[in-house]
Image (tube, rainbow, N blue to C red; front, side, top):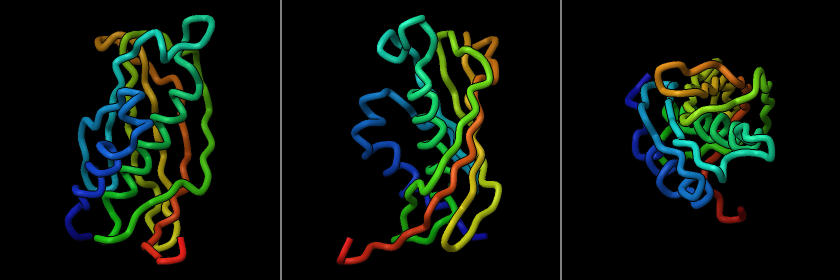
Length: 143
């Protein structure tokens, strides 16, 4: 395995307008791994005060994409092909974090697992877990 594609990982977090608007931040990156965080605000919650499932799914999916991108060649990019998320318990707290790890890298598809934690920083608990399949793509003129 060569060097990680740090430039692509940073592009994924800094260039995605929805991720910037959400407030997600890149925390750490390594070969086949990525961690992110989100300081929770009222806009991230659903009607009963818990972190919205869509926020959890977005953080899980996006962090998985960045983890997969650490292993791609320059010029390639990742695009989610499928993901499944299990919401394990209600998410409540001031911080949401995600840790994603590539389970099976590939030249066409890569499978990544994301774990999302929530709570006060001193007591984060696993609240959801996602499996994400990423397509590995190269730019084409007809896309």
